[in-house]
Length: 166
Image: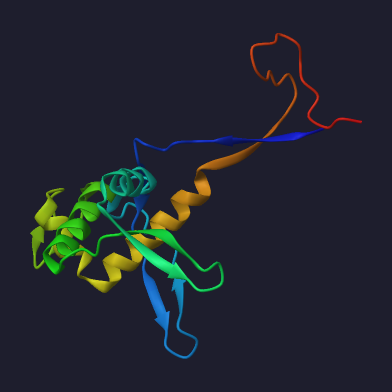
């Protein structure tokens, strides 16, 4: 039987229960523990829409550069370099977009709320940052699942399509 891939947008985010991460200094590999039963949770959103929106709104520079092989001028378009303040703002925007909600985390004895400032402060903690980065990796893997292709309808036709032509 044929298989199809069902893509999920996961735009509403997915809840992840906290797990510890440990860096192996010999191999520089990160090892991940099991989620803590009843432990703190973070709701993580797919970061792709954030970067797509940023790419659309980025300013570009255009310049003409001489191509020695072709012996003619070519137009080269590149993104404008962000200032340090713009980079810091973009990083904060990304963290705020990525982490939708938090439950059960504390920083310096105070509960971490899902505010922009608290999320940015928490991401400065390496253990928390490794947890969030791993959640994003896991989220990317969750965005596609294999399903059986029986009775798959393609296009507006009401006939069942054969995926493997003979």
